[in-house]
Image (cartoon, rainbow, N blue to C red):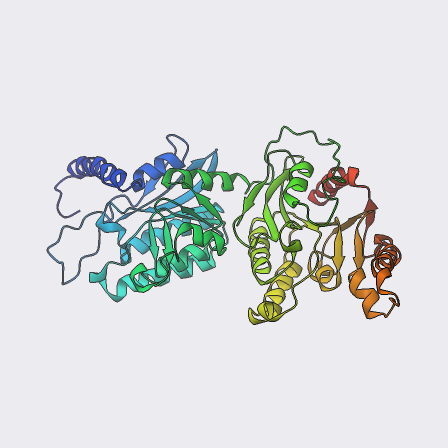
Length: 468
């Protein structure tokens, strides 16, 4: 660094700046970059990379102090597992990104790729360093290209401003955690928006942009550490592998909450829901089954009948893509009243969204187990976890209903009802005869029909077999 005569002098100056930075960020309700690294990594394991890299000077600020680049990068252990990270530092030039800033981030990605280790990126910047002009903009482009090419899992933590190009980068990563008190993520500056709720944490969660909401900067880091634990194939559980379950009462009726089934079937207390606030007709998240990490994707009959609509389809597609990168087995629980039919879904390009989901699921190399708990009619059965799309093990409860059409629609379509007062009775009889899982099992589309008491054991056995 040009403004310091010795390394010792520079080291002392940096130490003094750290206490100033911590105080400055505390006043804003945020942490400085060094504090984040201290909280994120196991004590004494963080190694900073490129500590003394200074900002690039231009002809417009040639006489300025080439202070440290406002991003901290490095690696260390989180729960004993190697992780790489970068954190923008708002206490230095409001976290402005320049050419060297981008180079530091790309360097960390290169190291992570060679080590096959995950990356956590903390976003907290007012934007690009304007005086660097197009070089700063090219820096954003280089980061985008690096993130796009990365094969390792990536977690974005939005602790402060993340506007414009940084918002794109954060959304390119696999998971996005936003701090409710201080985070914001949008393309346009808030001053250009009429609706000031856009880009706020709550709205981001509702729209499916945010994977998990956190209370504040520190909590966002804890949430990132929680997600990281599910990157392993095994996560210790105190649950009994052969614990008997009883879901018959839980799934009685058409409007039950799938969360109750997930809590009962998988290892107790292990379920981590993702994109919880958005498209709640579908439930997605990680859990463990006999201590093995699995991905859970399920219709939720409690919300609009668990329909696979444009929003829930987008959510499921994102989730399967993440599972593909992590190699996590997918357990799909099926029970839905079907798909929406009407102008609203078509106007949102429903066919293209379904196509994206089917392509993603069918080509995903993860092991897959599906269970039909209740209703699986028509196109819903075709696209949501069937054997035809590559599911390895396909089960159905003995109470499941599988058919080309819903019973009510089928009897009406076939002209079976002569006396309208007997419509429900005829539909029930049709369901018993034509929508039994036995018909699907006879054709080989269902591997086995099981009692609800067997649900946990049979899913667990399937996961164990597929893990060999």
